Length: 222
Image (cartoon, rainbow, N blue to C red):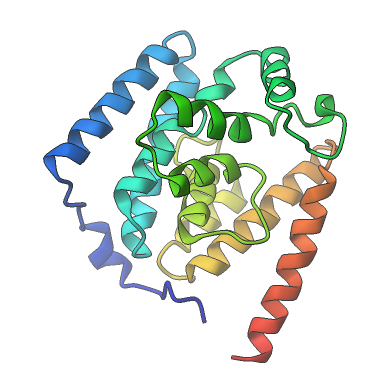
């Protein structure tokens, strides 16, 4: 069973994080920087702030560090405001290897790019925050609980266009364990790509198959 067990959602919904003055100052600084960075893209800015709040909420529900979740949410789309061509240029400069022509995965490169660029801009960011930012779109075979929280928050934040599948996922926060919530969110993302006839990144299939086997093994030993 996932160590992040199911909680009483009514109790958790009223829970507030207890941040130190230093943490609050850091959050305000990152928010101010993102506001300036995204001032010409209000939609992306609103999404980033919504993901941050959603990630914080999920962190409180599933006993994950809320400060790290909030910061990763604020910064997760830092590189996405740049044109895709510029993102691809950065990815090449960083020698990022996706195993395919980068032009096929233009929508996926912003997370791994940000892992590198934000580490330089904000050297105080911990490795796990940067990893969660890198994995928020692609995921990975070995997701940390923080990774899962940010991944799910990006998908279900309330400013997303209404969709029955997303509404269902939102109702399961605090009902499903975190592993299950992440898994169902990940699968829903694949279904969306298939339903819109988009290019399916081959590593997504690899991650899917590995997670299927991991989940089967977990059930065998439950």
